[in-house]
Length: 328
Length: 278
Image (cartoon, rainbow over all chains, first blue to last red; front, side, top):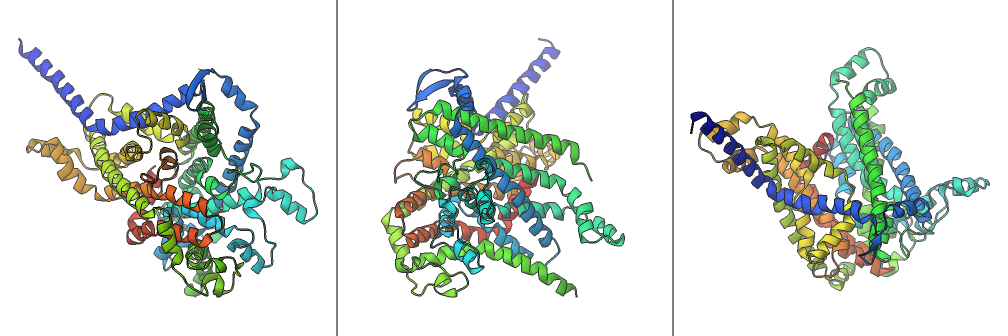
């Protein structure tokens, strides 16, 4: 054997050793990810092409279940409700959390205390949040209505109210809105309020971290140039915070699209009520797959639609961040 | 003058803070009321009996704690949380080490492939996971609640980022000095990465304490059931016993809130850091 071939052989076996070693280190995590993440995702695609009843495959469906989705009014209703929920959550959460974060960033006293309090609901379990807020929205005994009455507003039925919020507001001034303009039911609005309360602290903390990373010189320069507070905010803070804003918007949107627990626990008999106005996509998936007849193929179809929406939003986020966010 | 300008800011922030805290106060105050008092419509700006019960009772706690096996739910959750936290820390350290410091073919594609799995919503893999777990015979066992969560992609990602900040020179020097590769991980990388490990541990702990949908689907007996699922069933069965419901909710959130107050700095900074990076 020549010296060269020995060297080459050593090199190859060294590479093999390195690969083997890496394999040993990655194996525990990889095995779990493959079996409990990758495999189920692949299976979800697969099973969406089959008819399933009570968890048993009963026939090949091809794309027919996807076509069924198109004419499934319950699916469109769930998609509409979810969209209402997202649209109700994202802008309000963005506005409130940025507002609070800007106030907190004024080098105020007790910053830590405020931050701790605003963040408290984030670590609280959604189950407890749902139970407590269902009690708060109780039509007769709830805290929310007692507050409304104390400031001389009309109490509402909240979680038991299927009428749309715009319809209710318009009827207060004597206008009858057509049903497509009624908007999300007051029940869904109540769930949205709960979700805002629970999630705002997270966005505040993210915004605060973003605000604190803006160099002070920019503010000094703005001050020297005589900019007032609003000018400073719109010309300095807002553009410099844009990467954080994108992150907050997209993350809040993606998480809101997957709302389940609040609806599951705050509405009842049947879940998604009143009159199906709070039925959301993930609950529809749960209901199809586990509650009524175990139609897991169809449930997977709906789940994959949700996946496509989330994936689309993630790609948009990528795009926007790559193109817009190079300020400093 | 400067101080005076701050007053409106503090007023606004305090109103916000009060609305964050009031639901918790309302929860605790209801939990201390007699059933008769919970049926008095509250008067928002009156301290008694809305906020402070006329008669403070702890019977709701006693009854809720003994009516369904909450002690069992707590033990289940603590057991699941301990296993998950340690499991995640070990699998993440090993995998992140390989992805950060080893040089092997396919390293980056494999890592990116794992990362891309994070985008998939839980609703997509929920149904097939149930099928897989029932094929394994794991439904309604601790295995179903622990094993699938023993590896977390996001934790591997955070830790890999951290390990990469530690210079490769350390690695080469340690190997030349006769340190084993495993030894380098436990003696050099891990001690230098404590904040990230705390972050991962906290996320994992909060996650296993608060998780709901997964155990809701994967369990059907009291023996295995963790706290949140137990709480949800309890609340659904109570009908109008609001005192009992609020008592149960209070003792189910109390442990995590205590952990939060003790480690609030680490918790908030963990979220802030991982949010910006993710």
